[in-house]
Length: 207
Image 1: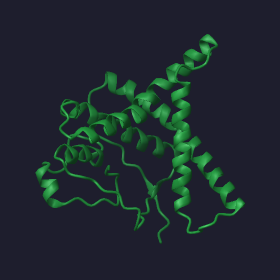
Image 2 (image 1 turned 90 degrees about the vertical axis):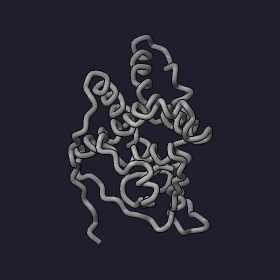
Image 3 (image 1 turned 120 degrees about the vertical axis):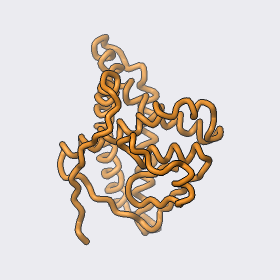
């Protein structure tokens, strides 16, 4: 499991044993996730009750938010890699985190130069099979996640088409992560660790 912003609850005992919140990060929830796992705590996910989240208001705010998420998520691997490779979390969690790093960070970074080289040399991208598998899995799980939000036991044809359209739109939207990761990686390669982040303006429905 992983802590993700709002809707999270942490035992005081666990927080104290981990040393409290880390002020040397711009993504304290992601950082705390690693420290809880390193201390052998488990993080559970509950699908009910649902927690609503306010969305950012414009493209610039989205860009700042995603850059902060990318850098904070990336930085925790750099901060705790020596403990991860020593298997302090246990074998299952260690492999899970390494696979997550591969899918969430390494592949997006590699896909852009791979695509540029494919265009320059007029050949298929080397990572095309892996990219295709990743996109297929993302489509499948997003579709099933959206399907779970509906209370209908038997879905009509129109509802299925609506779900497929929403899933397709969601997957297209996620492609911005490729640019975010490429730029974040380049910035982190030449600049020191950043502890100041830009607060993003959010908009809720005020219900």
